[in-house]
Amino acid sequence: MADSVAEAARLPPSEALAFFRQKLNVPTTHWTNLWQAAHARGFMVAGAADLALVKDFRIAVDKAIAGKVTIQEFRKEFDAIVARHGWAHNGSPAGGQT
Picture 1 (tube, one colour):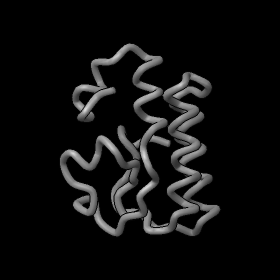
Picture 2 (cartoon, one colour):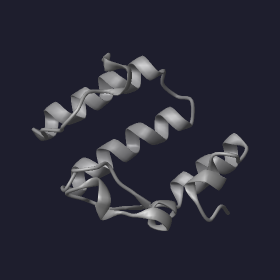
Picture 3 (spheres, one colour):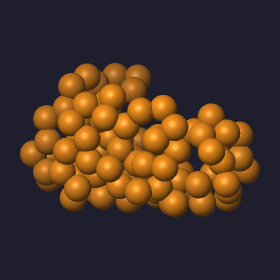
Picture 4 (cartoon, helix red, strand yellow):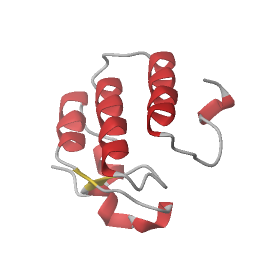
């Protein structure tokens, strides 16, 4: 198993998915709450401080990594999760598109 996110990025897809699935859900208030090597063991979304919110994001990310949804479908699901939880986040989605 990889010891860092950088190592995991070089794994074959099935091993990368296994690496992702071994992570623990970690609610955070700021992107620095989970730092350096802790990223290898924890799943977080910066500022997602509610465990249910993190869990929903994790399910969506898992589906994307496993190839079950397109990037466009993932973006829509992300927006739906944000709306469902009433979460306010800073910034815009990657590429500025949803």
